[in-house]
Image (cartoon, rainbow, N blue to C red; front, side, top):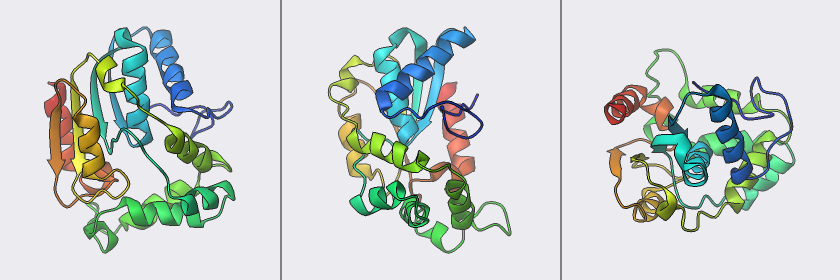
Length: 209
C-alpha cells in the first residue's frame, strides 16, 4: 500500500511540518488499518519517516527497507528559497541533483520516455508550499540516537551516484545500527526506484522474503 501524506497527492488536510508529526500520522494509519506490524518502505523523506515510525512505535513495524537514506538531510539554501517562493527552479534543481549521470542523457527503462522530464513534471504538480514544507522538514530533522531505538530488521539501499543522500552520509546512518542489510546500486542516483526499477524490485523482494 502506498499512502499520500496530508496535503499530498489525493489526500486532503493540513500539511505536517515535521518528520515526527508525519511519523505519528503514519503510525495512526497503521493502527486504523488494524493490519498488525507492517513492513515499511521509505525513500528520501520517506526513509526518515519510516525510521521515526520504527523508533517511536516499535510494535507497529516488523521490517524497514530504506532508500536514499541518511541521518541528516540538509537542503541547499538556494533550493529552499526557490521552493518557498514556489518557483519552477525548485523542481528543476531537485531533478538535476536527484538523478545519476546516465539518467541525464537517457536511461529510461521505458523506450521513448525522458526520465528527468517525467520526474520534473511530477514535482511541478505539487501544490503551493508542499515542496518547501517537505524540504524544510528534512532540513531541520535530527536523528539523534534513533539507531539505538530501532529493533526490527533493516535493509538499506544506496546509489553510488546519489548526490542528495550520498553514500558517505548513508554510511554514517548505517554505522549506528546493530545489524543491517546494506545493498549498493552502481551508477544510480537518488531517484533509484525510477533509474533502476527492476533492480530495486529484486532487492526489495529479496529483503522481504
